[in-house]
Length: 151
Length: 151
Image (cartoon, rainbow over all chains, first blue to last red):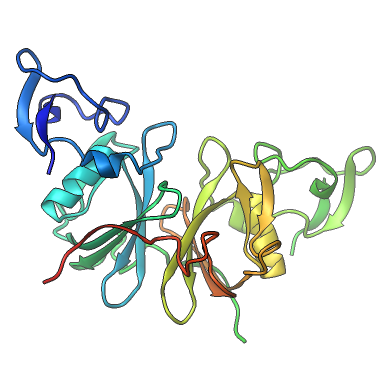
């Protein structure tokens, strides 16, 4: 667990280009506050590789069935929230804000496992999915079959 | 099947920012040549949404086991090659060239199914994987477990 003096992100607008996940100056006062686990574990942050927007894609797979449900995007803060709350939390590129999956729909994703790939630029979440994962009402988002080969 | 006058991409350097997948002027001569199926099926191309670099992420899942093996990137031409050859072909962002998975390692991916997600910006390939999918020698690239929850 990280304990230290970090910028309190809960008080400023969500910003994936911000300082989240970067080393921050010690000391309190002003906009700085001493908090517990308000920054992604530096050991994890150091293994992550982000795109130019500070994001990385996250593949979401259903626990038990292995069905690939969807792909969404995270920044360090979304991953921190996901790991600490156990509920999948993403960064919406279109709305430019964090969203807890199921917050409005009730179709939550309870995280069972989180794993990075070999070069640290993609996350795989294994989740228990409540209801359909897709906003269209289907279980998985991958319903538009382009090609299928039978042996 | 698309038949028409298109730019012959096989004769110019790979370029995901190029005209691949876009409507092209009719007529021959010069750098234009009449070919068969040298362009991604326009009905598929119209459903794809690309990032600023003309790319979209592709999740690769193993047929039969459901294991998520890796994530790679494609442009329209990589998808065209994948669908027409049946072998997973990606765009390498670091090397800036197409790569047929297994071309050097022998660890080919034979495509059984290709599906787009609900907003057309992510592809899911279901493949028969020959050997390990990861260049590190592991079956899947997702071996760096950040967190795992037991009930």
